[in-house]
Image (cartoon, rainbow, N blue to C red; front, side, top):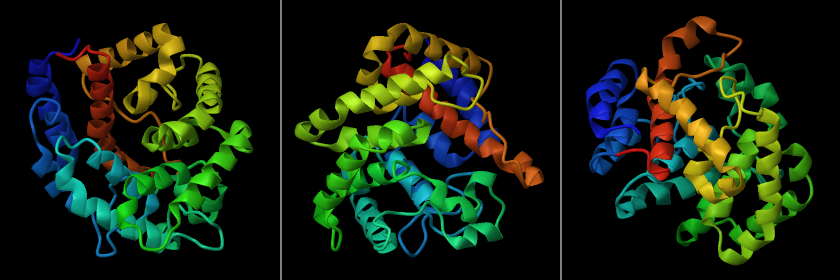
Length: 298
């Protein structure tokens, strides 16, 4: 159990000191309404093309908009208590997604070529951009577009949904890993019940397989149950003990400070040392969300 006083007296001051104000307001928003503060901070990361960049995803230091950073913006907007406040930003994000859709590939790319002119984690090198599977990040973008189809000008969202269904019935089983599973969970959560019915069994199998492979090694980078629970905890119904233990594992971390990244860039290490704390607040926020969903946060 994480008491509200602990968040106010210990966690929020640490985030203000070590992290970013966007994450400060996200955590504070668990205790009170900070919607307007979140939006004002989020807009600082937005560019004229309506996408988001400027290291909103802290491992990408280029100022340009990217799919990776814009996806983070979408996840942040989903935390607002009053979704009507996000309407303009959602409309702008739809326009950005449509404008950067790559017709000849029938999908999106995570970053553009300019990423190589700025410090970044090794997996964001532009020469590796096409190594990302279709499952990461296309399904979650398509789910967002379906949810906001009234703003679409060009893309046929039903055609894109059919691609996701085809993918989960073909390559997804062999390619599924943490990020593609999370992307597919976001897609699932935004679909109507008939689409959910078509894909739930295969998605559940991928979740179980990945959690089995991680096998409780939560100090290492990988899929943890709490990351699933903040999207759709029903996918953990058959793994309640594991889910509970994972929350206790992360609760202990929070009682001693903030959740910190457990990965390295493998390049630009001097820059990573300076900016890695930008992750602390956001990672802590997601664990606190999971604890609240499990009713351990009072």
